[in-house]
Image 1 (cartoon, rainbow, N blue to C red):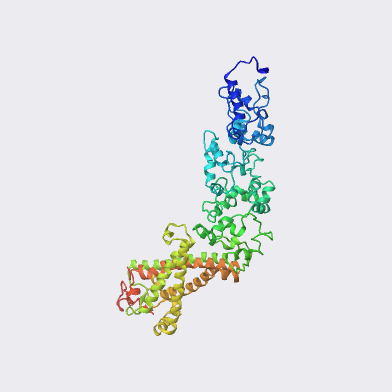
Image 2: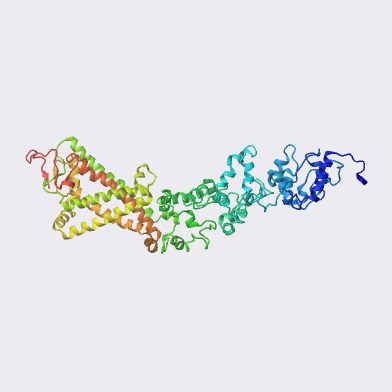
Length: 638
């Protein structure tokens, strides 16, 4: 019997003997390839042995299959154990990982838990102690194919996650990102939790040593996005960050954190439809602008420009901040390599406007030249001021003139503008057709034009999309040009047209008649002026229309054919054309309402309307036309 003589049989020793026989008798591979001393350990650590039970299921395929039990369970090499063996310390072999987990929130949380051992933090992620698979194996909970689910097991459970993290729902939001979607598709290169946050040395984002701290995030993202990271580092934002400017934006400030989506997605913070708002976070901040001396009003001037207005209406093809300044390697305009350096502007604008030979002309910045609200002393600013003075004077004069005429009706007596010829055909068929085309095109131009200029006003909604408004506006402009050319031919070659032109040519009396009319309406004169069929009232409107149409067509062409304009004109010409185009439109609309509508609609002598535009016949009916001899002291004048 030897050394076994005198030993009392026990259930544990019976199990151990059975296992020992099984290892020798059963075919190789049918049982687990256990360490040599495993049968001795299992004699006590089986379910029937009385000591803390364990199982070695999966050990033969684990990362530790070549190790003896005592390699991890130090102090347990001798049986029976002289004392309670110390807890398993994974750091004895995995020192680097242990140091990382020790300082991480995971290490703190697990090791501080009731009854948790130092190795407990490792087992949470790597699985059962005796079946830990290599991370490269798909069986490992920490493998790349299962890593997101592993993190979700805690970070999707509010009971296991700090409240500030559970509110952010990091795993569910990650699943919708470009990284999460690629990972779900099985893309081996998709960024996972550990790629950004680390594996063992995970630290909070506020820790400067964290991979996702503001100082290191560009480095972390650069592991996959190397060219973008390099470009960012050489740009103004990257340089400022490297110099310690904590406000300088980094990757997550523009792209987001757990909500990073493809730049082509409307949900992206840097999509063509949202990037202006993203850049505005800093470039419209008074604190940032004041602290770092950034140019003020850049966002406002962009929003007031054609590009900004088009972008606000959802036109994704419109140029935005990145279109001109670039994405990652953003450089100041003073840098010769900058896309907005004066020497490079033509090339930058040429990406959207081929052949654009952009010239600043009178100086200033692109923002100030393109913005409708900027003022930089160039011709556009002069014309803006000119119209701001001219429009109130002209429209105010028209309104005053008509109010005085209306008041004269209320006071009784014949009106001052009594016509020499009250009957006959006023407009022939050709002229009525021309008037119809002009009226329709004018109304369409006015509505779509102001809808393009002020896209967010409630009454512009029926005008549809920006693209639709633009095409309707241009179609109406084409109709205006065509009817203008037809009218010019009508005046030149038709007998009725030549007669009409002769009657509408300015005459000396057109300067005197307004004074006589006003004097009579104010009762400063008792003489009743007798006006011509086409008096200063019709002539002022006709020639103002002709002049306004020429100005609108010319300035509109500069804006519509922008490629040609950018290639041949300095930028201030385009800006000036836009100012004049808008101001002339305002003046024309006000003149129609105040002057034209009064004489054909609101004038008491034709109210509710002068139907000559439909019938062609004059319907001028003076309210009170005294007999020629009724008032010898108030002779009429020609």
